[in-house]
Length: 385
Image (tube, rainbow, N blue to C red; front, side, top):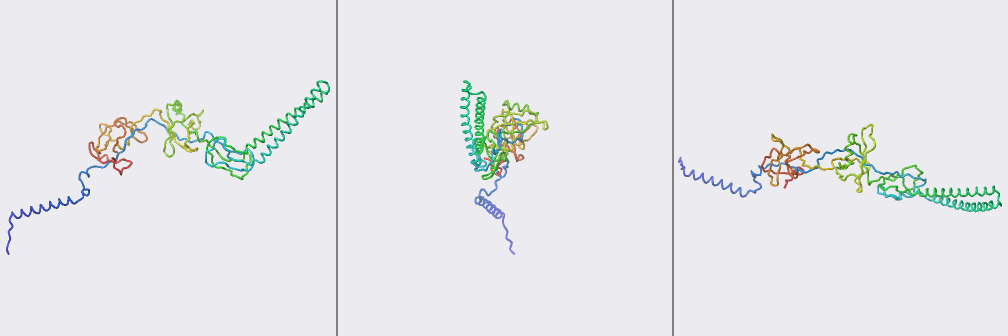
């Protein structure tokens, strides 16, 4: 068997050819592979963090009290005369104005009573005229000694009785007219009317049933109780040194100050509390009678400072600091001076102006001067611009 000897020169040549083939293969692969498909080492090194935007808030001390909405005026509509309901002239749940006719009770009987009273008045007036003439005649005859004293007395008595009968007839006519007027039940106040408790065709009698209820909706009253120790604070409200706001059940705030304010004249001995009443303009009907709201009492002078989430704050031997992220994604360590808390947020006295983005999640990935990808805490799936 023949043994073929390979020279070193051939081995080196073959190795160079293989190396060049491998290098050419890698080059061609890098050209044909899409850029996004290749994991970039630089991109993988940039950490992702969650940030929140700092904001200025009024952090002045405040107190909250649970309050109820009450109407300043409310009326139960009750019939003053008896009869069948002929018409109901309002839409349930609507706003009615003072003087609007709401119910009509059958009027025929009361119209007839008015006519009878007018006839009785006319008869009394006729009798009065006759009695007056007779009395004047007897008085003249008595002066000339043609009539006796007793005849004059009788004529005078008849005259006075006729005069009284006229007054009585006038009063009866007024009563009949009042009864007729009460067949039209009008709104004594302006406000929101509720359900009609009695409908057409039903018989009602005087003071027997509440036909409907009207509550004044503007202005409206907010009533709440405070401990007696808060009495002096409430005096500052009266002196316009404090302001009041209302927090509605949906969380929205009414910032308009109350149009009037007063404290009850005595402390409840059982609860050691004072009743307080605020009056608000409610022309937009935001406040509903019977609803519960929170009354917020705070200083009239706003104290606006930066607030941040406590999760953003870190401590070291030199004090407190946060990491801020600018528009380019650069992280900066920012020293801050802290105060207390406000509604769960940390108050910042110095170091932040408001509007900065501070890291609240992923702090372990951040350091001063590093690059990060930041997303707002409210939309952590979207990268911040």
